[in-house]
Each structure stands twice: as structure tokens, then as C-alpha cells.
Length: 500
Image (cartoon, rainbow, N blue to C red; front, side):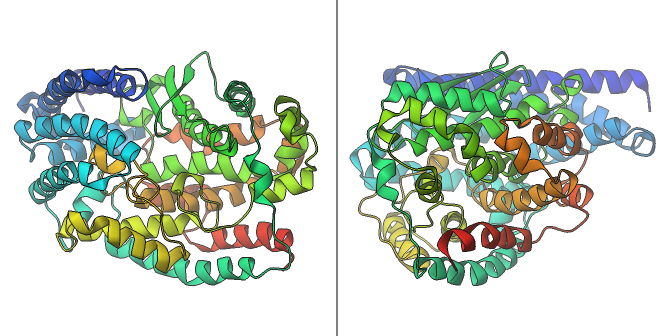
């Protein structure tokens, strides 16, 4: 392998990353503080950046570098170079099939769709958003057809977020999970003990929520010298490097768990970004493995840590000080309430057990939407029917139904399955962490989350994209991905709580 060619290759890859970082900051600004009337010009700015990124990613010069390096001996001698070459070759071969004009039109359409989604959700009127969904579906079908697909067009889109995953394989896992999860949830609903969720609806001022949320994020390891937290309509994590990671959350003064657990969730994403090797910034060895693995980190910190009893044995006095309305609530009652298993409308506020059924719904709808077997005008009715079938509840409006998530306005069809995969990855990783650190609960009770974060950084974060997701799971846990650790985790936590 020519060292000069590889150096040129790395510089080129980092330039692509820098252009994408500019795009990321523009998108973050749009979601947090851009004036509403700036949407049209922002759409053109993002279209321009998308075109620049596409040009760099598909240039003949870059293709030539990849061809020369892919035929070298790098793969057998240097895992860093091999990873970078393999992953950029994959990206190049995908991107070169998509014309620049289509890339720019997608960026422009997404930028305008986001604003339309915000207004449609505010007014609980899917019809206002429907034309944007129609256009985005058309564009994403074009992308899938250009990229190429085997059994199902949806696979080509999902591969962007979870490389190597197929609809058929995920459906098999989801079917196994659903078969055990639905009766488990029903058994909890019939249990002799039930939580009082009403105590979580007490008034807690936004300012106090913001302060406590920030304290919790810092306590578990999010570095605010390399990050920040703001407010957006839909919480997210955005970053340009381990040194610039941006979280957002949202506040409800009548339901403080939305902000507290939402912040822990996004901080989990952020700590993954901050834990990537800074020596490899801008290259695949400094990027997260997949969105499913990314989601495993956020869900672990939100639920397996943040909703654990040891976490609250340490932090509950702080919460009662911050929220005087909670002074008379015993820890046992609070802990049960924040772990209540109750079918509900909103995915991002769903409990650990019912959450994956929200994803099963979206996965099925998206496959139909991309295949063209579900008309856009019929989405609200199909959504509501699916909620009744899977969770036994019917959304009372589009705002708490098919308009609740931002993803379709972003054109990210194929993204949703990664959330459920993240649950499964998280449970399997957390079980491995417990085996490695038997006193993990003790460290949480002491307010020490460093051992878990160090373990995650050593075993997951530092690898970048060296392994594909299915390989990483086996490397870290010694086993293939399975729904079993997740179901075992649920049973171990919720059966004692509910007295069954």
C-alpha cells in the first residue's frame, strides 16, 4: 500500500466529514434556534452542502484512490487502514449510483418538510404534512432503485443505517420478540400490584428540570466542555467530533420524566460520540458502528442505569430537593412509577417493555409505504389500527399518533428498526458488563458511573467501525444477537416489581 496514496485518501475522507459537519451544524441550528421564516433559505444552503458532499464522495479522484488501496495489502496488515478503506469503498459504491441532482433535491425537500411537520403536529393535522411525505417517499424509492436491492426495496434504505440488515432477518427477530413480549405485558397488566403514575404529573418548573437534567447528564459522564444541551421539538443528539457534541431535550412542567429520562437518553448518545477515538476523527475508525449500536448506548443509560433502583437510591434526595412537589413521595412509590408498564401513545415516553411494539408498528408501516401498498392518505387510519392491535390503545389525535415522530420529515425511512435492535444490543451488552463488573449496582449507589463508561469505551466506543454490528455483539458478548437477554432483563426487573 502506498503511504502517500493512503494519506491523500485519509485527507479526502476528512474533508468529506468536515463538509458533513457543516451540514450537521446547520441542521442543529434549524431545530433549535433558527427563525421560522428562515426555512426556505436554509433548504437551499443544505442542498448546496449536500451537493458538495456528494461531489467529494463520488469524484473520479476518490474512486481511483479507493480502487488502488482496495487492491493493496492493507487489509492483512493494518486494521485501521483496512476499516477505513472498506467502509469508504462501501459508501463510494452506494453514493456513485445516486445523481447529484437527486441528493440536492432530497436535502431541499427534507429542510422544507421539517417545518411542515412542526406545523402539522402543532395543529394535529396530518393532511398538512401528507404532500411532503408523498414527495419524500418518491425520492427515497428512487434512491433505493438506484442503489439496488434484492428481496425488498426497503432493505436498500435500511442498509444506510444498519449495514447488512435485511427486512426478512429483522422480521424474524421481531416475530420472536413479539410472541413473548405481548403476553408478558398482559401479565403485568393483570398483576396484583400496580404503580401510581399520577404522582409523576405533579407540577415541576422547567428551570428546575433543566438544572437537574444537566446535573444527571454530567454525573453519568457527559462532558459539557465538549458538549451542550438545548431545547427542540423532538430530542436528538448531533455532533461534529468528540469535542463538539450537542444534545437537545424538551420539557413538560406537568410530566418531568419526559425531560429527565430524555436527557439521559441523549447523553448516552453523546457519550458514545465523545468516546470515539479522537485520533481517528473524520474517518470510519472514528465513527459509530451503526444506529442500532448507537441506540444501545442511549437506551442503556436511560433505562438500565437511569431507571434502576441503585441510581435512584443515590439521586432521589436530589430530585426531592429540586422538586418540592415530590417531597412526600416515598422512593419505592417513585421507583415503581417511573418503571410502570402501561401501553401509551408516545414512543419516546414509552416504558421499556412496550417500547419495541411501537417500533414493530413503524417497521411494518414503512415497509408498506416504500412498497407502495399503503397510500399516504391512509397512514393515520393504519397507524391507529396498528396501535389498537399491538398495544390496545387508539391515539386521540394525529399529534399523538402518526405525527409524533420527526423521522419521516427527515426522509429517514429505514431508521426505525434500529431502535428495537438497540434494545436488544443494550440488554446483551449490559449483561456482559455485569459479568465483568459484579458490583455494578454498588457503583451506581455510590454515584460512580465511571466503571460502566470505561467498560463501554474500551469494549465498544474505541473500535469505531472496525466491526459490523453483528460482529461487535459477538466480540463483546461472545454470542450472536438474541432477544433472550432482553426478555431475561425485563423478567428480572418487572416480575418482582409487579409481584408475579
